[in-house]
Image 1 (cartoon, rainbow over the protein chains, first blue to last red):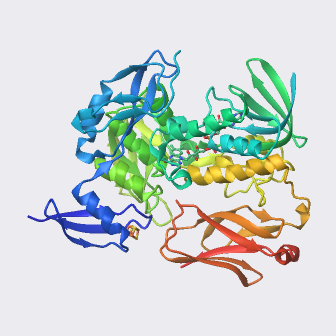
Image 2: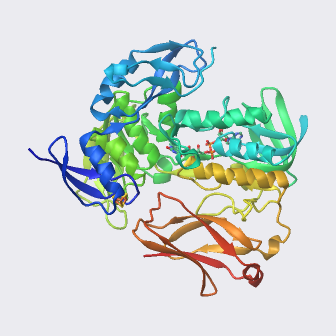
Image 3: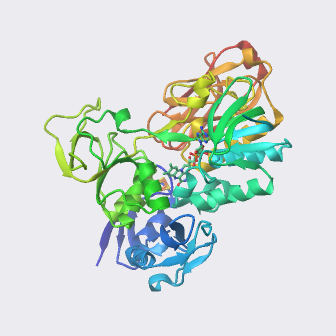
Length: 122
Length: 414
Ligand SMILES: Cc1cc2nc3c(=O)[nH]c(=O)nc-3n(C[C@H](O)[C@H](O)[C@H](O)COP(=O)(O)OP(=O)(O)OC[C@H]3O[C@@H](n4cnc5c(N)ncnc54)[C@H](O)[C@@H]3O)c2cc1C
Ligand code: SF4
């Protein structure tokens, strides 16, 4: 079974629309990229799209009510809202250090969530 | 009045101010002071919690707060003095700064000043959107501060006007926080933000982008209830009969940024009408001797990396008091066909000059030229051009050209 996807290449600002045909596991055809760099991008994007995730977590007793956080690795696109749901349930106590681990193996993705900001204790 | 004498005074502690201060100190100046009205350092960065900062400068993609902390740590290491919660009220041609904080009013005499006040957002009144005046209308950056710093949600059903990067990033951010993002409305035929943000902030979450559209009316008694959008023609006038109503409680405006230069104007510094920032020479010195400009108050940068690099130059020149002696003999850079603006606006000495400029419209393979007196001084092929991406080139300008007094025209042709 072939699937067709139109992918906008984001490697450079030309933003080629690349038409990708896959069987779910492999690329069968690729069309519309103006240069080679688009191939790699479109392959990943068609077979296993991932995104860095940045959001915030509640802080108790801090100078700010929130601390900004990020995923240590890009999260599979279809898991983003699962990960966000777990993050939303989390609360940490001030002080928070930048780089401090907030969640381990979030939503069974094997990815951790770490703080990206210092929040001092009030 | 509390009197102080400093070598370099930096107004604003965003990435521009921090980078300039660190660089001034590294170039051997004595007392460097940063003044900022906020209670924190880093300017706008702590609210920009998404990643994508510093890629070109360090090869690593950081979030806004991480990028800020990198520079804050450097500033601490260099013993740079910081005056937070301090509002600069004015400065004059003698480089005397008047500032105020809870302790009182200060008069700070500086050998040189670096302007790094950043920018502010355009509002509903810059776009002249008619209609009622209910609550629920925010600029995108204010909404970003509410959500990311203060844990406040601006609304539930949101429309965003303007497809600049701030607007796109806010579309995704609101979606993450459970809001219903009904669409992004853009008057131009293309998104003004980076393609990466169009894909990762809108397409990923099926948020519609209405190109060639604008908001023509705002309705609501107390809270926003509904907006009307309409298609625009080639002259950007709404086309009758294409109106569409959208029920929403919140409208975010991402209409662009205006360099913050009230202080500069007060000091009679010449402002470039197109960039909205001070007119500067190759040393980033403004038309006021000993006053340098950098960051978003000089011109609106798209990425922080280039901003920091230029800010470091401003800091270095402020430290060395690289004032241009032959200021009268300077020649102008004139934006020609295909070019919206060029910074610096003038050059007073021969040698390598770093130019930053923006194209008028998106295009593919193009040629950038610097022309003087019908002769080509510099030529560079560009694989693509986009007004959203600032162009940076180094151009060698012979001293004879400066002496000739002729202006330099910069053009981009396909
Ligand atoms: C929403 C958003 C998203 C962005 N995303 C990215 C990105 O993904 N990647 C990237 O590279 N760049 C990004 N940028 C761009 C980059 O963050 C900004 O260009 C940069 O922060 C601007 O730095 P600045 O130092 O010029 O100004 P600012 O950070 O705005 O700092 C100016 C400072 O001056 C102070 N100030 C002003 N007037 C006075 C006064 N009279 N007295 C005392 N203090 C004063 C202000 O309080 C403020 O702290 C983004 C920008 C925004 C707004
Ligand atoms: S395929 Fe090549 S030219 Fe096209 S957008 Fe991607 S990187 Fe740019």
